[in-house]
Image (cartoon, rainbow, N blue to C red; front, side, top):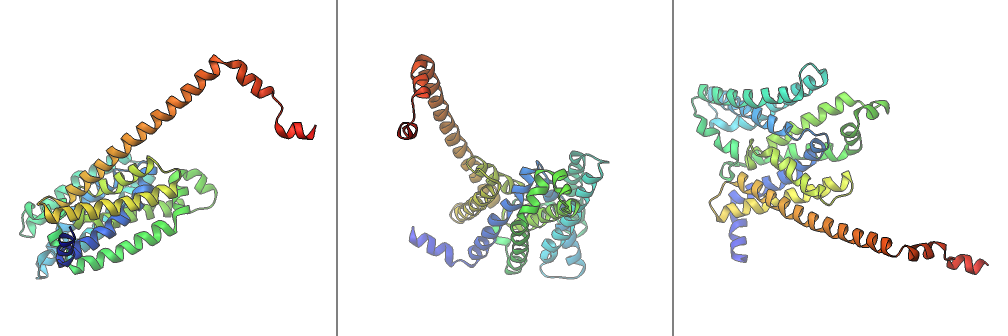
Length: 316
């Protein structure tokens, strides 16, 4: 086991990939907590689809600029287009002219279609988008790590540092507006952070599965957490655990890293759900026993209620 871990950590490819997985696992649940609480869990999926257009656009620009490799500008392109898409859908949602579901649907279909169209113009094929669709540890470069780290620091700083204000907006917009908070700006900030999260996670889990990493750790945390802050903290820990463990497994077994991470997270949710269900059942049985005892011997409870307390006896 120690030799296997040593071999894993000595690989430069795995060093880059594990660092990227650590950042992704830490940052994705931060924004996911706000989206789940706001019931916009599918927003990350919509942005993930439109980011494919950004990948292909960056690829096309790199081809015209004779950049080597041609996809060097793919992630920066995904960042720009994801930001534009996130801001657009938030403005559409705030205007009320188009429902959020309709705007998300346009992002879904337009993002994939635009990506396939532009990658063809760049001289590539749709198969070359697979590493961005489902993640690929072998394609992570140090330049990607630098960009992912910068974006990750921004997400943590804003998502955690502005947590009270962002929580107020996600919990009750009308109340937040009455307190003087810039609701429109904060809502746009959540959308922008969602876009940055998609760009950060694209290399590890892929754009099609990034939404799962934003939502599932939060869903697991909600099974046991009792506050918004604890939900976010537990979700961040679970995100790091699932990303690093799932990615490490793909080093020894030939599996897709994104699919392995997501399936592992779903497995954790299933285990947590069963544990929560068992604990709820135990509590329910205990309450029924107490109720039955009360119904069978009501005179005992009456006697206890009328019996003088020790402090009353002493004062008398």
